[in-house]
Image (cartoon, rainbow, N blue to C red; front, top):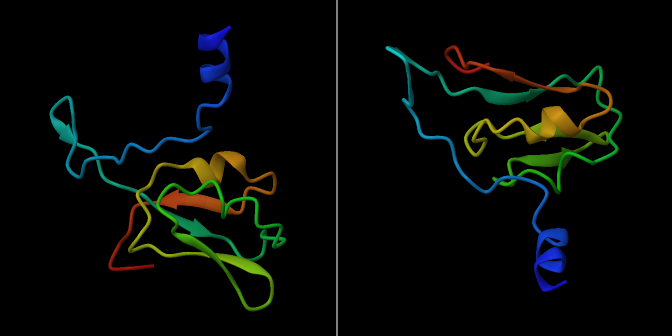
Amino acid sequence: MRISLRIRFLPKHTKKLPVAGSFVGEDIMEIKKAYIRQEKCVGCGACIPVCPAHAIQMKAGWKSEANTEKCIGCGTCATLCHRGAPILLVPENGY
């Protein structure tokens, strides 16, 4: 009973940060950052509390906005969003 209660209250998202330059075979994995497509965002705010890096905020006009400096590229926001607004991209000279 004690173990089952502990498992029940585990956090639903990861707290582990990806390591820049993680090796995948001989290639170096590129870290992706979240970008929120404003045309798909309805401003429900579901992505804000699940972000372990606190990189998503609500901006004026009730749209979410991702801070690429804080984003760790975990993809939790992209997985959770029912509208598919957040996507993960490899930054090229900023967005």
